[in-house]
Image (cartoon, rainbow, N blue to C red):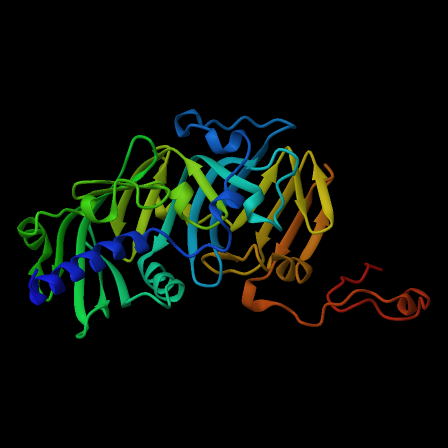
Length: 354
């Protein structure tokens, strides 16, 4: 093979590997340790149903910005579903996002294209592809970046349509791949190669390749907390990807009028040192922001700076500040304070009415 032909082949390989990197974020645990070990892993999405009883934790959320690590987040406009344990002997715990999955019956979730770009650039520091950008183009998704695999940096671009499969997977149909404005699909035909020849039929867990099509199982690809359910549509509505579960209604005007909250009812939920049976726990955004900024990794810092109250039904409601509005002065009450009844109540504790 001539040097020029070899260079073009290398460029093709690098571009296709980039497609795999797009759907394979860096993970901190091996597949074996992160895979659910009980029935939650095998629940077919077509059988999703919410049945509120003492043994099942029902989850509700509106206007929730849920962080998945420091570089990625999703925007839950609304969901109804269940919180299922992933390990037979462990209750779902807010302190361990790998301990549960959200099984969604109906809901609408947004993923910002700019956040996806930021996450890809931050999670792949050793990748030869730099300055990755994901944008929407009508009903198509465009991924572009600069390839530093060869002697000269090469701008690359992939355009694909995106849709939901009946089994809940995401379908990317690649319509164009370009290197230096030269269509790679034509080049690949000249070399008698296609995507499947380069990355294999199953390059990574959760990815299936067929011709110019990629089928992605998001329950295996994305970091926790994991979301399962019947994905009925996925569209590009710049600047977001909009994922709809269970043919849920998506009236932005009405949904934006709800308070921002996350609620758990029924079943058992662990959080911090506490375990709540027949759970009745509601986390409510104390701010007037459009989204409730909740970081499960650091949620306790938000929780201790919030205001809690018990309900007549022995439920717990916690009004929590946003992640960036935490009060650093909250401390545990020392024994010396308890010994002196003349000392003032801690800051933030309401004074009793006289």
